[in-house]
Length: 108
Image: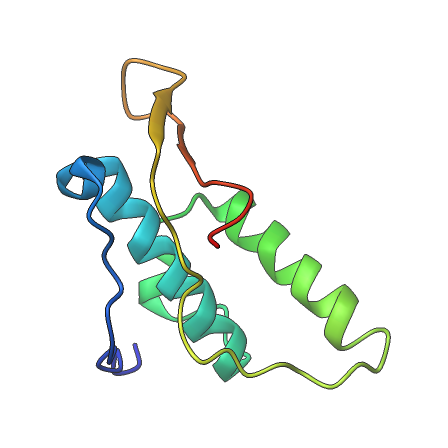
């Protein structure tokens, strides 16, 4: 577990979906990926506690294949990506539900 940094700036849109539990979870997941990537540590509890083991392993392999195997320098992300939720689509009725929090193609 590493300390979650304070996010400075406006990270929440005016969308009425901001209070939706799936949007809140998507925002948290975005931050967890940034923390894991910036620290090159995909074992931190913030990252692993919200993903299946398979998904966590896939995200690590993707990061490793791009950053380590190719010799590309690691990026340091200043924070989670901007998100303006425009819809939430659920694909199942239980814990296996996947939420697709849609983002517009252009924020501008």
